[in-house]
Length: 141
Image 1: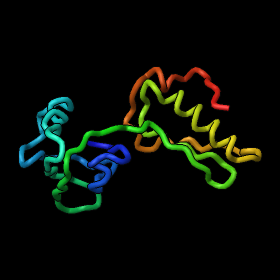
Image 2 (image 1 turned 180 degrees about the horizontal axis):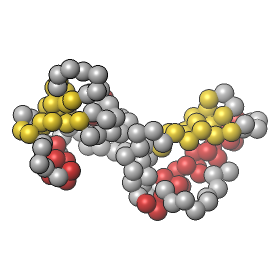
Image 3 (image 1 turned 90 degrees about the horizontal axis):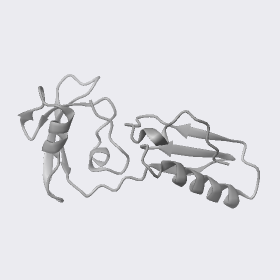
Image 4 (image 1 turned 90 degrees about the vertical axis):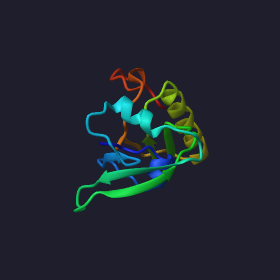
């Protein structure tokens, strides 16, 4: 099962959360560890790879072709939705908290008025650095 991160080749190719990769370039994935499967997907930049995917709601597996890229993951994006700040956290990296604080502060400054609230969107987040997802209270204001 996979959950593609925004702005990666997998997301651009249309892969979705809960898709299941069955084959990588025609080779079965069954029996491989996650690390082994990821190693098979890695390769030279600008080279193609074909993943055979099973998706709920589709009767048959289908192929998705994508082109490998150097991936730079931005752990979050923040924007206004009216007078609410919407934050989409794509992954928890070592920099997530600092980026969150900085982006929210910049948005609050730009708003020039009171913010009514925040939406923190964690959907399809594949996880990341435990230190950034800690349950201890942290301030973003």
